[in-house]
Image (cartoon, rainbow, N blue to C red):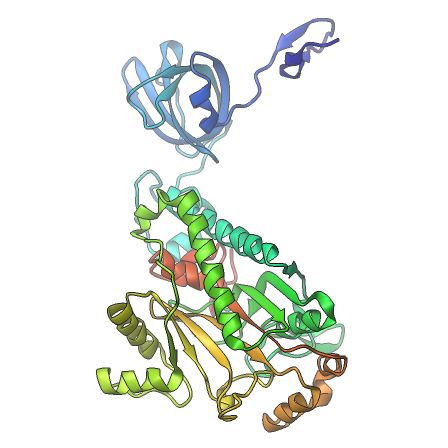
Length: 449
């Protein structure tokens, strides 16, 4: 029978005799390999030649390690960001943050790098946003930028984990649709085999249909598309929407409570896994207990009386959101605030009217650091009431037949919300522009890379 270490051996081309071939060791594993020979692979972050010795800082997906090149390897020409394979002995040292370094025995260049468009070895990338986005592939090599997307991945994983534990089922809905979810004009039109189709603004119709079909609780993580000519620091034309919808609710505050607990869970996960990385962004984990709540009318009154600012009818503008965020932070110490009871005129046709005042709706937005990150609320579940709402909005029910038919088959009271993933990261990490939170952002001007 073969020995346990046979996986580390291979047959020579002539056969018959086994020779040792070291498997790749990840950099984070080197701490456990003191005085052992290892083969590591990665990218050259920095090289220093000091006469008879050279120091190479090597990076892989798990971290960085200092490699010492002596004797015939001293002065060996290596280019920053070139990919190499290095074999050597792991030695203990007090000179590096991980407590070990590798004394090189051999170095193999796997691929050289072209000249870099900007310096990657500094703590902060010294380049303008347009230059960074135009050279996106290279910018990912910078630790601070790659950290954004590791935190983004953890945010999504935690969103999924929490909702799954709460009995939600993940769904996958079409992004090619025959009608915009809100019946508005801000949709991207395209030719679909001779028919007019659109890129989905939202999975709203489909997640409602899945709730009513018996799943009761569903969520989706997917791109959505808005044909809005906003060229601001907080808008994207394609972004990731974190959607949740649940049935048999008592009222829309049940949805607000769910989102509050969800955000607590997500930020606790980030604190456990990424707390050291947050310092580079001057970011703090928000303290979330009970998120404060203001009706839209209350918020508008504060803006008028405290800040002498008028609000647009039925909504808050960007300045108003910032000022309300500031007000709640100063008065209640919260980075979050729910704004509730938007007018029916400004909300989609599926939004539930308020019982006491049908001109208002049981809906909400969630502001984080003075920026809207969530829209949500209770939906109309009665077929006749939904038809009436369509009529009030001047919409033709025949154009929404497949959606409306679902409400004829015992639809439960339900509601949900959607979080803009890039936008919440933009505010959490104190980024200068929401585009920094998108790997390959799509705005009014950018279609590449």
